Length: 112
Length: 388
Image (cartoon, rainbow over all chains, first blue to last red; front, side, top):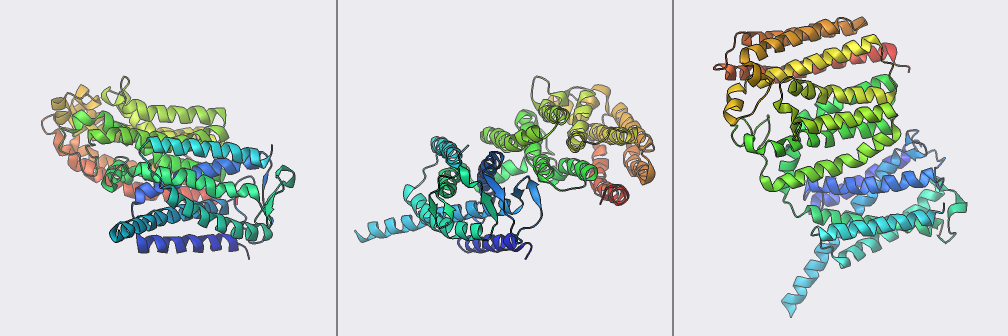
């Protein structure tokens, strides 16, 4: 199914957005700051990908799940969505992890 | 080159970034980073395998170390590591400014005007090349936000003193930027512009690169001393117009357009329209600018002469547009509403110059209609000219 991969990525990003919305983690905490952080991550990962493609290490797959839209040689549009998903997941896990640890710490200091 | 060598360099860069953000006040909780890393590593192990099996991407197997988790090469686990070296630090470093501060910084780029620079670039490239590719997307994003932060944000920094004395600042026409936000605005503009700027230089031709550099230099020269062309008669309107024609020229060069006489007429018409508009905008400020000790074409020539030159430039733009072949000729008609808006100021005096603000407000509205008609003409052109 053409576009299946892009669809799966969009649904996953949507799931993260729901967590974000519910707990005000990233974009729903500080939208501009979140956008700048995500952009930094995307720039770093895209540079890495392009380097590895240029070095002949990465190739676009032949899966029928891919759209036929490449932003650069061997660089399908889905890669942007994938990197967004990776960075967004990292930040949601990190911020929620920070909150969890802070909660444990306050609970512990309240108990002692 | 082996994949692990790239990973090593990338990780070194990530560590550098971590140290940099730490020196900028980011105190990343290592515990939270470890939790996130554990989660992402598990996700990588699961999904990398699925994605490889589905054939979504592939590697040159000779460049891999050969250590796999299932089908996933061990090198791929550098992805979550890099994400956590960079992102939390950037997030926390940016958190040293409040949400309100970030909103102010964003507003200094004039979001209502973003489209005015992104559109000429995107239209020029899309019409010439007929496809949406990486260069089109990156270039459009560059001219959408970073370019405007470099133009208006930097302008606000260097106009700080005079803006404090201008009662019209603070709304659609710009905000007074607090001094403590000057540095963040300059840094945000520079860092946001850098990656896309470098990319466009790398993928373009020498000509498109040169034009891009000139375009950005023009944006900075407008407000940054010693050039500060906004305070020099003639140069102010010329530079200001090139802020908007420039992106179109860069787009054309990047897409490899043929510089036909018809295309040059179109660009000249666009340029004259932009210069006329800038000059007319300056008329209303004659008294305020003089009181604040700021100069412009309008303060140099007086309100009346400036208004008249502006009307004549609109007229010249219309005449230049007559040489555009086909339906494009119709765009010449678009100057008529501008003449109607500006002609009442033909006999304006320095004392009544502020009344030109009424015309200026109409001008801002009129641009929406003009943009619409130009878009329709471009679509018409695309339907008949761009190869399917």
